Length: 211
Ligand SMILES: Nc1ncnc2c1ncn2[C@@H]1O[C@H](COP(=O)(O)OP(=O)(O)OP(=O)(O)O)[C@@H](O)[C@H]1O
Ligand SMILES: Cc1cn([C@H]2C[C@H](O)[C@@H](COP(=O)(O)O)O2)c(=O)[nH]c1=O
Image 1 (tube, protein in one colour):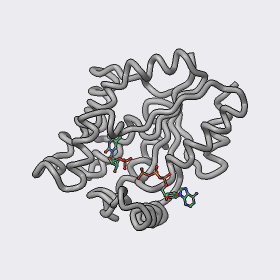
Image 2: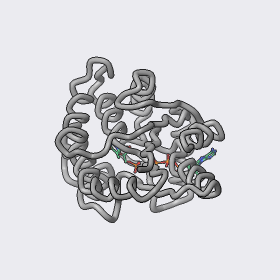
Image 3: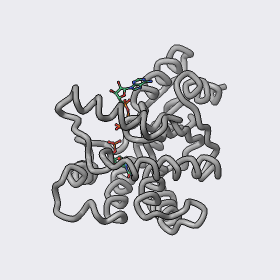
Image 4: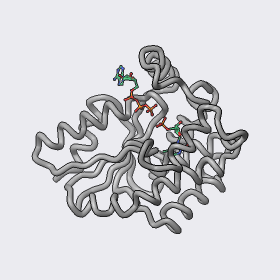
């Protein structure tokens, strides 16, 4: 049985980039490695609906924190069997965003503190309890602060017409609140052990989990 590792962090922090580096390093070491990216745009109708809402479609859908979180959770629920199979067939399964994204963004949007957050409990009951998606063995918070992540997201939007900034990405106060929520989830080792690192240290933190 392989290990399931979730890479978390802000919009534009560089999660996709670091997942690529971890994947390459693990394969170089001979580890059978698989990756999943959430939301699964183009594969999941609920992921696509969430993205469309973040870009202005579907009326006031995006205003509901619980409705948005439910769409993201349904996307993961539909991937649950594939995730479990991947863990059986690989040494390392890396998720670019996972359940903690729902916890951090939802708590931040509602202004709830992690240690007493109703929505964080709702997310874990729904996703791990009811939908039975696998609990990650390790979670890594990519330690890139809001101002850096937002600059990277804006730079990407300027050079890629298919990646305009969305409703969450253009909200600096939300990005700061999400980073604080993630930091608290990591400090509390929410659901599993966390590390908090960037760049080479982030790659090394995940590689150290492989025996
Ligand atoms: N270490 C880095 N230094 C400078 N730029 C970087 C670094 N890592 C990623 N970038 C750039 O920042 C932008 C965002 O990176 P990436 O797409 O990996 O972020 P992400 O966290 O997956 O974003 P999102 O969650 O919004 O999909 C890209 O243009 C990427 O090339
Ligand atoms: C998976 C997931 C994502 N979100 C948030 C985080 C982002 O701001 C957007 C879209 O994700 P992307 O990585 O920028 O494509 O949605 C969330 O709130 N809950 C989730 O489970």
